[in-house]
Image (cartoon, rainbow, N blue to C red; front, side, top):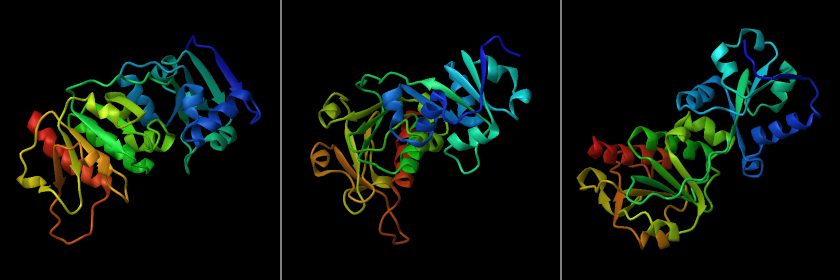
Length: 258
C-alpha cells in the first residue's frame, strides 16, 4: 500500500503516544511541539486538498487494513495504534479512526490591504472555529487573533473550523499595534450602538473586529474604528452570539467583493 515506514504501538507509555495525547487534549501544546493534530477524515482531506503533506499519519489498528492508499501514501511516516490506545488519546466522545500530525504552519506576516477578521479576546473555541469558517467562505483571507483570544490551532478550534484554517493566513498573540499595519478601515461590532448593518455602506476591503463574548470590543479598539456596526434584531433579543454575528457581517461584506 505504501513505502512509508510503519510502526505499530500498543503502549500508552510510549513517548510518541504521550506527545500525541497532549496535542489532542491540551489546547496550547502545539506551540511547544510545533505540530498540530488533525483527527478525523474531514480535516485530513482538507489538508490534502490544499496540497499539504502531513509528517505522520496515525490509524487505528482495525481501520488500517482498509485505509485508502492515498491517505496512507500522503504522509512521510505511518503509526498504527491499537483501537484502545487510539480511543485513549482521542479528544472526541466518539474517536475517529485516523488522524494526521502536521507541522505547524509558520505564522503569517500581516498583509496590508487584505480583507481581515480581527478577534479581540474571543475565547470560546467553537466560536473561533465558526468565525474562521465564515471568514474563509465570504472572501476574507487573513485572521488576526489579539492576545487573550482562544488558541487558533487548538483541537476544538480546528474541529469547529472544518478545514478553514488551511484557506487563511493566521496570526495570533499580537497586540493592538498590529492593527495599524493592516492599512484598512476597522469596523467594530456593537450590540446597541452604531449604524445598522443593512443601512450601512461598507468599505471593501476592510477589517472586521469581533469582540469578547461578554465584554465586546475593547474601548481601545473602538477608538481606532472607522465605523461601529450593529445588527437589527426585531425579535428583541439582547444580543447575538459572536459567531452568528460574524457570519452575518462577513457575508454582508463578502457580497461586495463578488
